[in-house]
Length: 126
Image: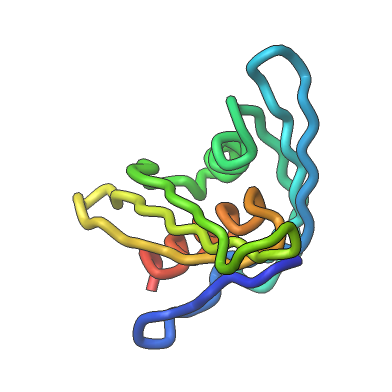
């Protein structure tokens, strides 16, 4: 399932994305179901939002794990052509006001964004 890039000074891997599925449930709503590893325990989570990242954040929040505010999201292709992987960058703000960035790479641009979010969460908790 793609790559979450764990940069910085070896952040602890507290959250890992193992599986992810998203389906539309209305005009502007996505339901996400994910299997994650949280502190080395495999857990299924579910949430809804206006897109995959929003739904994943709501799934984390339902468990009390989203103690941050999503501030920025950007993504781009790493090369030309339909087989290119995407790199995504996510910025979150912690409750103490710190800004933390994460990066993710995946052939699927939506999953790249999720991996970037996971990277940022891990960096914020390290």
